[in-house]
Length: 300
Length: 304
View 1 (cartoon, rainbow over the protein chains, first blue to last red):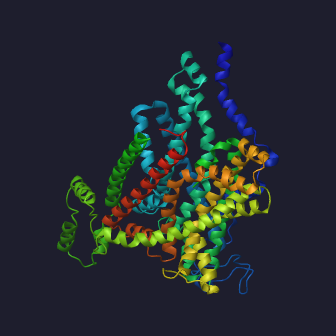
View 2: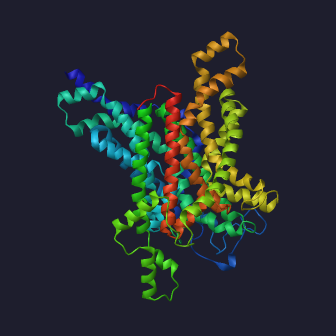
View 3: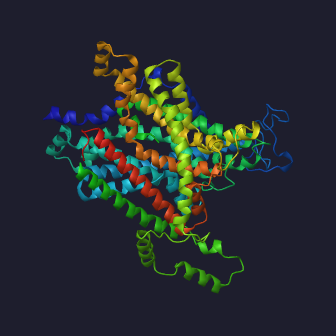
């Protein structure tokens, strides 16, 4: 009896062990460095920006980046049509992108996971209802849904987060439910029930650690996509409203000046590509290390 | 098999109803379209008149009932902004979007599939790295930005391609490519992985021992078996295409369904919004259904 109890408690340890198996020498160094750079940029934005991102300066409009003729080192990446420093705006824009991504994934991912566990473990009507809701949500093109919600609720940070979270939860719920269904049948769960563990304890101690692999993989693979969705919403005018600088709205602002001042639209896009590419690469590496079968589940 | 189809079909219908309720409520919640329609000096009487004309003064359940009964008869109402039947607007725009989607699909198949297959076959070498670079960038670059940059380079600076709008075949190149890139990236990666799995399997080794030519092995055996994985994502692709269409069509001023959706949402045009969302849902659910049936047909192990 004592030996069996010891085996039941091993599941969290197994999860930790699988995390530690990510050997250091095979880490994707460059993507991680890029991500850390942007993270630090976002956190310490006030301290490192050369100018204020919202301060307009009409005499200094449309200055090209420092390496072009007419540029100056005072504005390394140039200024936009209202004289605002592009570099400072990109740095502050990283705040919005990363914050929205983090919050949406937290809410959508956690909410979806919770619902997936409930659905998988309870079965029956509750399961059916949750899964039908998930299917309906997934039947929707994400940006259409996010646009609708963002426009309905009004443009603001919280509403963008809510809108994106709603488009995310269904994927987690479905994946987690599938995992729970298979874990539910395994021996150690039956043993736990025999020993008399409460439902809550079974879920937390035994089901969750086995499900977390799936969740972590999905999360890492979706960060890049969420950042792109936020940028797209901002570009279409449904994101965080001005004067807060966001990468998407910067690209949109620069549309009219593409010929005369290409840097206003081009440079924020480069920032997006760098961050998203790094997150995608890191997500790939993490998912290969944790659970090779799951990469395909999170395409798009 | 028949039972499976029936079950999936009914699930689709239920999903459609749920979506219709959701969009109905969302549209009403999104704000008052009358304020956008009326000139500033409109009197309260004018406002009353418009509200009555649009049927917005009736209680919500009644409005929903009217909406559903009309929809089931094929009447999706009239656009508030343009005073044209919604079905007509949608009907005009969808063929344009389909043409663009067709161009995108061509690009995906012509470039994406060979890249995916070659990436697996020449794993680790130049083709593989190139394919993975294309795929990686495709999934990292936002459509609107890629579209703008391409426009800037090829249309404005080099004058090689037209800037925007629809017309000759040259108009299809840039928007088509922008729409294709993201999905192509997904296909390349999926295909590459499936092919790698297939090429490693026993029966392929057996075929090699038997002396079957490399070309037959790659294209006839491995490729056919790898197709299953990308095909199963058919429904996801349809949703993705509509998503991309909204942005791409807005950037390139393409008179398509995506742009219609965007305008509808922006102008809080209830009937148009509802029509657009329902149409989208029908398209996606149908594609999902067809894909699931196809998948179940191709792979006898899958059953509900």
